Length: 420
Image (cartoon, rainbow, N blue to C red; front, side, top):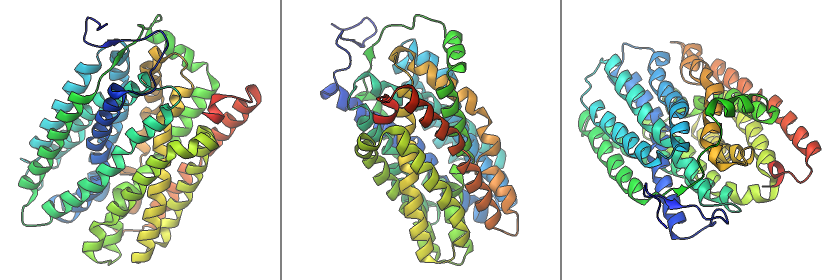
């Protein structure tokens, strides 16, 4: 029986684990990720274009703050969208967030060369807020429709980001660096994103869940006493320090090493195509290895590959490093939300747990791979310094993940943390 707010009442038997409504929601959330983090992952195109053409008076570290702030806001606006999602504001969040994101991209097309602060406010702030309002809810709503196949469904949703990060860079590189130009090119990109967001909003549906029986501050205090949740959150935050370095700088790195400029345009496409494969296969692999085991392995692999970017010098190294980092980073990102749901047995508190996760990761923009790596890179483009810093910093997240695995194994041998 339909609920008063238009949502479908939750059955007493729990999530249906499938059905037309569930898979339509998965497709809508997939499109949201395609237009959200999929677009952010193409910021390397903007970084390269701004550095060489549009904002030549500003250093790479300053320009990278645009993408870093966007990424920060997408995650940390969950401080707002998480509690609102738990209160049944799902549809309002995705509609308002989609409108803000669409308008910010159209506004970006009116920016002129050298107008750094306008680009910073429109692309960095407004776009980040819009994507942030939709990111948490569109990931959390999938858990309402699935139980046994939840990791598979979430990994399919997460695969929208790398697919978007394949399509958007190809489109933007041809538009910005071709005869179309910045203004009309960004408008064309904004039109595509707006159309896909409209389709996504029309496809997604939420199920009515029991309202939280405790206040959000109580949930936060509870999370602050859960050792596993704290270690998981700190580990995720440490990993983010180096995560964005290849995403922001791989294309610029390729161009500065005198690799053919047309091939450099496709360096991000190669990386994100592998990321798409990684996210699509994560649900299958995690069913055998366990969520936590697989996320630790992907963290180690990503950190090693970031350090190996010191050796980037020719086409072959770009292809190998791009494919390897794309795949394992895709596995890592696809497992973050399923890992949160493992520590959240009560789905009515899922939005608050995303809220708590975001609150602890609030230092991310200060140490993210964009600004600080750009500062370490300097005007001399000493690539080995940011590569080493980002790789070593990300590898420190394993110091948090290992105790979680040991604690979970000793406390509950059949724990869902290991085998879900």
